[in-house]
Length: 215
Image 1 (cartoon, rainbow, N blue to C red):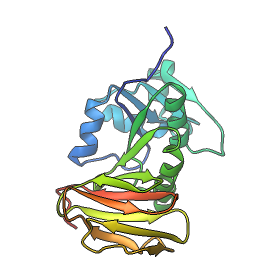
Image 2: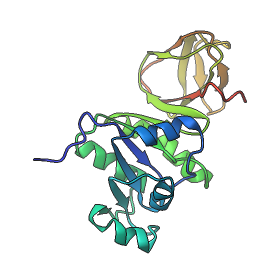
Image 3: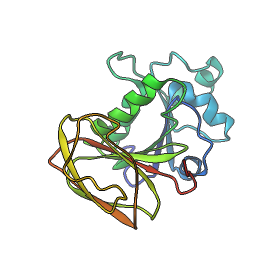
Image 4: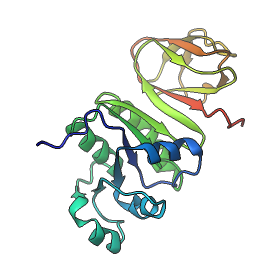
């Protein structure tokens, strides 16, 4: 029978800072299949969880984990793609309709920025969201209504320059605001159970703060 991730709750653990907030940890505990970027294997096992596979160029997997999980190693030495991208593409090829990414921020700011920007590429393959210790982050590509809660911290980033965005349901309305820099539509607040963004086709990244994160 062909292996498939269809209909499974799939979580990818990247090799950033291992999460401590309850929300990303909940997704790890409830995952039906965990895809581990190579160097993150030690942290995952240390948390009492098991990888379904360990994928990457294997440059940072401790020898004891490489030996213990030898039958679960997927070696990909392509230097043009990072390990997170390799993990997402592997999930997509094996039928996953959606993935949650955790552990993709921290340690190095260049990795963090790169991983967040890559969400816009991943979202073309499958439904994807990144859950950090402070927020849920995901891409949108067209006018949309987003579920929220009163007082939720909201930031909007555009990977395409000069995108005009109009909002409803935000404390500080965007009225055809051109997102010419990453800071321009940050630090907003939802005023209800949802908010809407109206914009021409573009790659936007949405940041929604967790309920217990107030700053």
